[in-house]
Amino acid sequence: MNKQSPFPYKLYLVLSEADCKGRDFLKVAEESIIGGVDLIQLREKNDEPETFIRKALQLKEITDNYQIPLIINDNLEVAKKVGATGIHVGTHDIPPVAIRELWGNAAYVGYSIEHLEQLDTEETAVSDYLGISPVFKTPTKTDTITEWGLDGIRIIRKLTDKPLVAIGNLDVHNVKSVIDAGADCIAVVSAICGAPNPQKAAYQLKNELLK
Image (cartoon, rainbow, N blue to C red; front, side, top):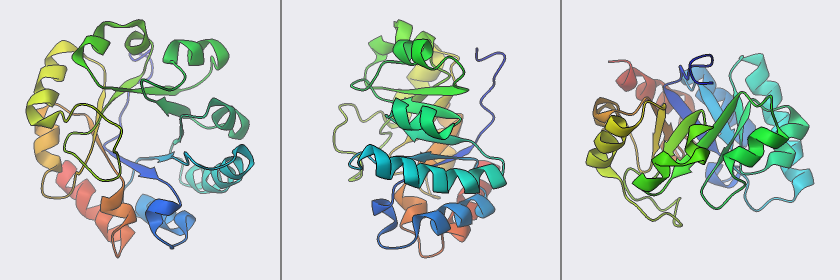
């Protein structure tokens, strides 16, 4: 599927209402898109399905307006219900193989890996891109096992031609080195959601990625 549906994105925002620390998450999302974000993942791990669906539909109005993909984190019911572009899952979530069976028209199925051995699994084979998480340890993601670092990205790049989305304590000072190590795209949370000016933060990140 990757040959038919390339992953042309550089800047990926992972967003939740809580990450926006009291600000309107929809406004943060729109400002980030104007600044240069290429796609958005909505991650609401603690919401009831109805609340998650409501937020996703509100966000989808914005992403549709700007013609960028909306990815839903780890909730196939929500992803299908709102007509999202795709879904992103980890090793303890619904497996990509099952997603393909239950949601055949998902444009993107992202899969975060924790061990190199996962590169040789069927789950990776049916995924459209791989999440490399975290590159550097971060307080927003406490349930991961491997801190990959730049060397980890280099190793993974040699072992797979899947698009690699790197996340984990990334900012304007290190994103270029992550791309140079072999990542295709960088994903951020606090670098945009926690910034005083999300539009400016997204612009600065995108500018680094395009150098």
